[in-house]
Image (cartoon, rainbow, N blue to C red; front, top):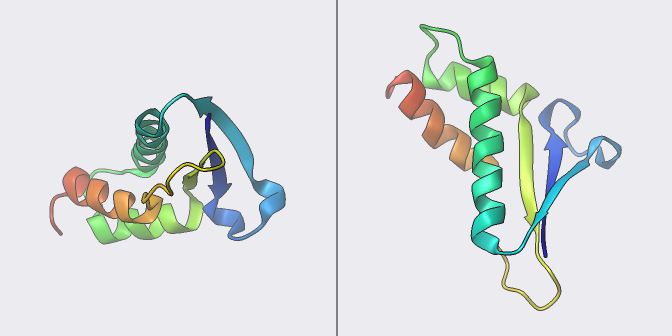
Amino acid sequence: MYKVMIDDNFHYQDESERVEFSTFATADEAVAACRRLVLASLLESYKPGMTAAELCDHYRSFGSDPFVVVPPGAAKIEFSAWDYAREQAADLCGKA
């Protein structure tokens, strides 16, 4: 099973703030869950008129930072919540 964990960007590198979100049968399902969590975090912070840079800065300070823990022997998953947040912020706010 692929386990999705969530770090809190407000408590950067504080593992005591880490929570387990859920487990998934496939890597694709786990990554999809991570994407949904990032998007939800962005939408929670979004205010009309924000630039993508402002939204990203807010996300990096206060958003959820999900990642996937792969089962033993499985290939590493290349997913960056911060990179995905930057892409989604650009879509939400325009390319500003």
